[in-house]
Image (tube, rainbow, N blue to C red; front, side, top):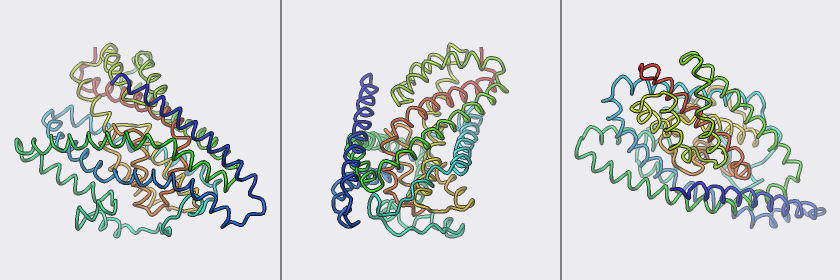
Length: 414
């Protein structure tokens, strides 16, 4: 376990190296493309696009089984949460409210800044995709989320249909008692196997980034990089706004102790930021929250759940990134569709917090649900390590506030 942060740092360095190498090679190709027809340029770029295509297919390969196994196990274990009663209800209420706040704030900011509007991409810019259709009526959406076959839903990566089946399966498993525990343990083991697979797949990210950046820069030129600087700046501004909102809520509940809370969680937040992993900060965060004054039973209950269900930074990023990709392709999503997307992300993001680059997996499923070109996901790969640092630190802050607030509500704060 101790080597995981080091592996994350190495992977981050390799991804950044792949991005830089892709930019350089793409610039060289673009600079020497004068006089070439679009078809001739496409032929040159195609081998590099294949690299990112393979990575995307590998990511899509594990989405459905990952959501199924992790969500069933999570729901089955909710039986224990219900038994806890009052503290469980308050905790889940906070998680839902915090997730919706993060998602909604991300949606508002990305609509205000419109960072993707500068991209002017077409479906063929990165890879061939299916035609784009974004008009989804509410009745069609509601009907579509209920699967006629779980195998068909998994084969087509219909992520919401997998979620619905998983919810029913998880509740039924929990209701079986001892017999259900056997299934839960088996699926928990399967989930860990898929998480291991995900780690292997993420090792291909630097190559995918290299291919994606080469293809994009070769076609678009270096001017497209200015869009990334806007996107990164606007996202971190959004995280700052979210931080202020969380601190305000914490102040209303714990009053002046919020400043002492910040002092205690500073080091865990820095660990999360530097390693791009909120999990790396978990042991230290648990110790610091108990030192702050949260009761041990509250910390041991709320914090582990928070790492699965309350990732505020990641939630904001999901709406920010999904709508950025839609804007990049010039796809207009009306307010109703965006709110529907927000609710989809609310459901599909739960239970897969342990996945490396989990947000990318969730975004991939969401793009498919709304018929947005999934190839747009590779636009984010090159800058994802920079964004992951900020959202990992915010995840630590969000779960710290949640633990402190629930402790105060329960009268279990020293």
